[in-house]
Length: 172
Image (cartoon, rainbow, N blue to C red):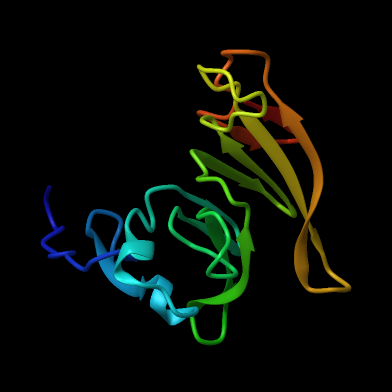
């Protein structure tokens, strides 16, 4: 790749790069920020595994999956961290950790809506898993994301393995 010679190596981190356009023909990517779960709270080395394996970005929002994340040490693992872009500092600032007790397989964000997919969620205890998707919405008055609706898949459907949102349409 021409112009990209960064070495991005850090355990459990998400790297934020930005496109720099000097001229119409000269473009390059530069490292803007490194986000880690330890910048949010106390994460053990085991809890950090997989951080950043699922991400979504839309406008001011950045969502990063944290499969080992827990709000309370006794909780089942599975969380995602939400960041909001600060135009003054030009950095993403942590807003909220949402613990779900299940590892997110996919995340999509569109404006103030978020769709999270858990393809290996198993509501019935039978295998294969049926999967689940959850809709979240930004609540400006409380400055937080809140769950709106949860939909479980049909038996052996693996709902939520991949999700997308745009213009009022959600695909799972």
